[in-house]
Length: 323
Image (cartoon, rainbow, N blue to C red):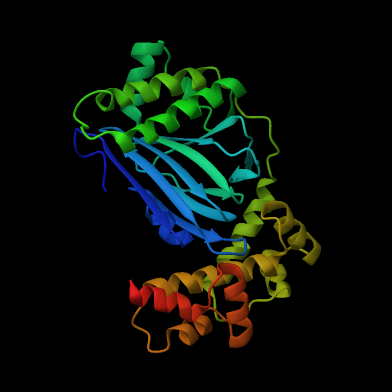
């Protein structure tokens, strides 16, 4: 579904047993998801498209590191539904009673915990600005300059989440999308969202990770992904990044919550899985994909892969071939 092309409401539910497939199920987003907790992935997206607005509820059961970009000339608002906490956008925590915000067409990172639900609203920026000016008598720049994470009223946020989820659920029993209430959904969505945003404060009370630590982790990741077969060691990374082993360890623990080697190994396992699911031209897909990402001890690789994803590499290939 491309969305934003017709004049009627379009609705769908998608489910997936793979994190990256799940990422691609969200219409008109450019995304890549990596799974960082062990077990079979389960994700669901309930999505409603209107002429200028995308409303969705996304549910995932594993810890994920997400690279995301909503469609251009739009604004994304993310409202966490889960009460577990632990979500983060870049270096900034997303508390339970807050809204995350990002310009469309701009890449950003989300770190989400296990069993996480989030409501997403993406709306054409001109429609958003016009509504705020006409209905709320507010210049939209008063909202958009808060870009990042905004603290909101706990009670108001709960009420807005309930109303938006009811919209998504109501569509399951409706048949005619040409008539109200779906024709008026855009105004209804904005009527819930705008007051919440207008009373928000920025930044939300949270712990912002040190940007330098975040950059060190990003650079280490880029180094490993650029040379996947070279078996880059911790001393190699320390030399390349001009940091001590202790500093590198602290940066990874603070930013991603695990040791450097563990994080980078899991990242590469995700890349192998991505290759197994997308490259069907290899004669020996498991061996070739593993070796191409620097896994030379195939028995250990297979055990690590199965522990992370809940299936063996061969089972992944079989599922792709069966599909």
